[in-house]
Length: 556
Figure 1 (spheres, rainbow, N blue to C red):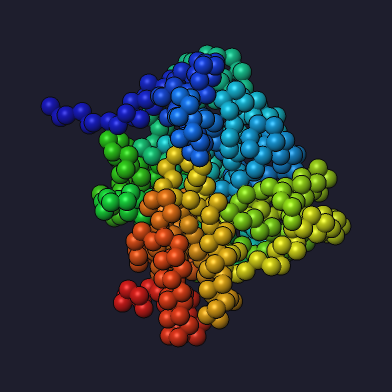
Figure 2 (cartoon, helix red, strand yellow):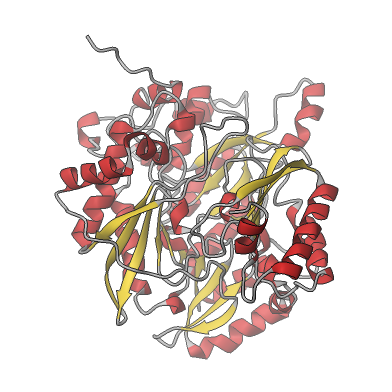
């Protein structure tokens, strides 16, 4: 008799969770603690939240015999990063009333609020709900926010591709009614038969599942960093289908060589809307059935594919879906950065991309960014689109409103700030890290701007200030700011120390490699200065820094 496969504790919690309900309702009513019950901490992720605490104050509170200062991060589900003006207003006021006040744009084209105490969770989610916003399935072992190339001026087929992202999102949503019961006060009736979920069953996926759609030549979504990457194939301004790539994922674990970042593998071309939806759904079912449910470090799709082989996985998709892949079509990706400033699309509407360092929307003495965006939203004259580079596009602006929006952005210092942002800073990105992320080993978004200022001086010293290179920092090896897919990646190993990775390509087809370990700031700057000097002396005309580093420093 075959032995029952061992399951991780999270798997048992999911299956016993009664459609993701667990004991969340009881946890929320417990006023003796700012936390929720341990099992519920796993289930609440599926509802779009993480329990966190202020790590800056752990020692102080421990000394006073107080429990940790618990709060919650709440993340919205915004397919393709799209937001209506009235939704922006609601988020702005929810951020002020219930969170730290900072609106944080993530690297996955949505926003999250931090510092929400337990008693404010339900009011926050109900505020969102009143403007048709939800947080369901933005965290947890489930399909996350579906990404799509953000800028409508990139391509005349943007609307068609964006619609595909919405359809994929809808097809892979969970069927549970527990979210509405717990947060929106719907009638509390748990009837498993009425919530039967053919995709997720009662166990959901082994780990998180990410999907992105790129519109060549733009790779702003980092399409190969996702479990499923769809590359739109466009001929004569007509969308003819998608190349599909599978098995991307950037997380690894320090000291465990069996874990690794991986870029997705292109396996073929898919034509027809129903076929695309069917194939994407089928990939999720295979991962559901074959993914590792014993060890979460190896539970992502990339490990399933590498265990069974790309050819086997492709054949299994064809067997289950009934669709036989066509040969992948040629495509080019040339740019991952956002196009800042005003651009007009084929509908004659204008779009202004605002640079937002590390995605933090707030007001400072010099730039009142948060106030400016609120004024635009309150006027109802623009939509908003978030990018995977943590910027926001003031979008779909009629020509008659362009001057008014320019005036608001200028009045609040936004446009003046953009004019002074270096090429390298425009392309930089950092994860949240301290003080809220429980996985952080080192600083990222709080520290990165100051480090970038010193790197900018090194580039200027070496006559490289006009180089457009991609630099990213994460506070741990989980790669939320996609540091493994940067030309220069800094990955935290301990407080104040980082591994330095070099040699990723500018376009997103190649991962970088470990160059130096456990560097403090002085060593990072010295090493980069040496690298920049070598690049200045020896690189070929039009050669990118990442390509130069890949062959010069690693003898590739």
